Image 1 (cartoon, helix red, strand yellow):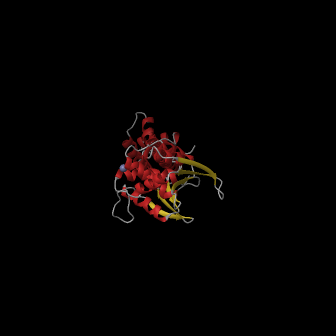
Image 2 (cartoon, protein in one colour):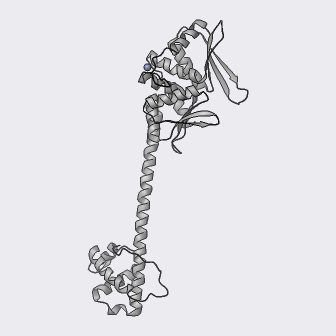
Image 3 (cartoon, rainbow, N blue to C red):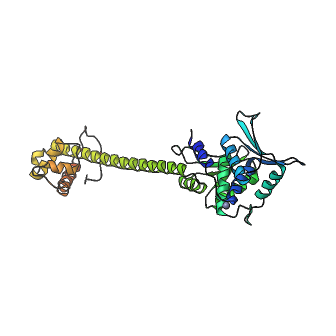
Length: 318
Ligand SMILES: [Zn+2]
């Protein structure tokens, strides 16, 4: 089962206690795929493409109207392969009462209006996500979206996101409005406000792991770069010492420099600090640095040999 499906399963079990929030969540399902049908005998239908959504609609309805009769129909959609679940409120009186209650919630004055209470805004988004939402596996990428082919519903969902401080954006995909979040932190924020706490923890763990992996990679790259520098510097030193050896002979060098030159030729790949430890008696890095600089300066003043590595390195302190 994917991360998206698991998140929805968790959210189906989150049932708000306050009546205002239950109505708000039911309204989300209605806004996406709900209809008040019939003229004389009205009944209310909630369509959904998942049994999870149907179950949540039923839970909310039974909580709000314990006495009401409902019927759940399962049909195979003609054009598509998936099933369509219809939860139908059979009583005309209850249908109208529920419809009225959904349309009499306190709304903001803004355009488009959203539910006024924060608790209800959260519940509305929970319903919207169960109804038409998806979230990608955070191991791959961070992307959460809710889509609707109804422009008014999409605008209301977007405005609710914004009202809760979530930086959602809207785009169109094949004529369908898509409201999405791309940032890991924002997705965590949304999962928190709609009550998907297990999904949130899972996502946070993955984010931490990813962060650590990136940090380790950075350190490894940094280390590799340093090793690379050390090797390049050492190769250049070996070239320059060979020049001295060829043009004048190491015996001509002052004893202190000669010793450094010999140790370097013997250990071409170690760092200057390690080279200092190989000296008898051992020499500090700064002492080695000073002597090596004198050697390389001398080497640079001499004509290059034909078989040199050709590597030149600016920093002698390695
Ligand atoms: Zn509420």
